[in-house]
View (cartoon, rainbow, N blue to C red):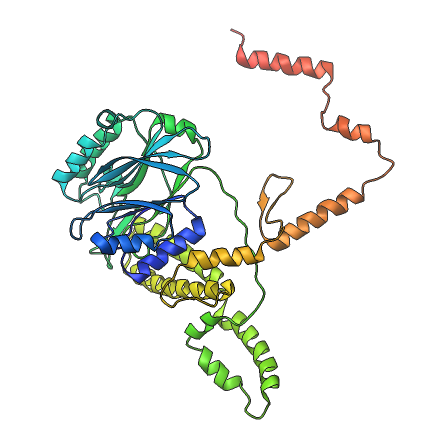
Amino acid sequence: MVWNCQGAASKPTRRVIKDLRRKFKPSVLGLLEPRVSGSQADEICKKMGFENWARVESVGFSGGIWVFWEANICVNIVYTHPQFILFQVMVDDQYPWLLSIVYGSPNAILRKKLWQDLTAENLNIEGPWCSVGDYNSVISDDEVSSRKRSAHHRSTDFSNWIFNQAMIDMGFEGAKFTWRRGLTPANYKGARLDRGVCNMEWKEMFPEAKIEHLPIIQSDHAPLLIKLKAEKSSQNRGLFRFQSAWLTHEDFSTTIAKEWDDKKNLEDNIVKMAQVMSDWNRSTFGNIHIKKRKLISRIMGIQRILAISPRGGLLKLENKLKKELDVVLEQEELLWYQKSREDWIVSGDRNTKYYHASTVVRRSNNKIGALKDENGQWITEEANVRMLAQTYFTSLFQASPSEDPFSLQRGLFPTVEESKLNYIHGSLRQDVFPKA
């Protein structure tokens, strides 16, 4: 995952980074334009939760590249540059490949230096190579929100670099623009400044690789999620208990004051409040994870529409939804704190990944997270998994005992009559070699 976060020091931005890590679990994370340098940058990097990291220093509030990677992959730094870092990556016994994480300078003169230095000839690059980041450039006028603002000066050099390096645009899923700015249609701007490209060797190595444009939330840029292969995920449901995240809801105190009966003893009130808060959780507070998914889905939908036609009302709605999402992310952090059952949680040290991991370890047992149905589709919802398993074994044990077992084996390989086989072959010959 690579993201131009435009400042890594703020708590909201770091909260989003932790949420992205928890949801997508990237083995490599690149943060661009962190706007922090020196000892402060080192302290923030140490708290990110990765065992390994490297960075290119920011110059004031401009530039800077931070790259983090997990211990389960082998990463070697090949070359560092003010506008990119080149790595060699190897996973397990896989053939090593090269990854460059790029932050192209907004200064056109400095960006020309990037095209000159980031070349296979200068860096002795051989074999699979993938390059991802914010290039601050587009390929054509179609990649900007308004063709009236010509992007020719930003496209020619970049297009020539892609052509000369024999790179392939990896495409994307999600909203078209990775950078957006402006709160009204009059000052709205959007462009696809962030992307991933690769050479043919890398494409052959990862033929199913794709890039997803995640929602633009804290920064003006969208995070890029690079998936090398398809992944399956499943969800686990926890037992009901009092959630400390409820304390952040404005109606919580009012509900407690309204439902608590001073005429009843403590035990009766506890029994009553357990039911009241259970109903309140379902009707008012809601499921935190579902709320988060819905908000992100709505933000993505709005950004798709804005990429086509910017509207003032949608821009205001998007800003409102982003604020709601920040509140939900904070509630989710509190939820994981509570589930971790750790007594020494320090307020302000929001390393949610650790608490999430401790919860998973505590619950670790043999569970079926997903099943593949007869159509080859992965079923992950718990109720549907149960139904699929029940249907399968019900059908299995209801099979007729008088049925010939050898006929079942023969049924796996359907036969074709010789006359039909000759007809099929004849038809194929006519299709391939038509008569004159």
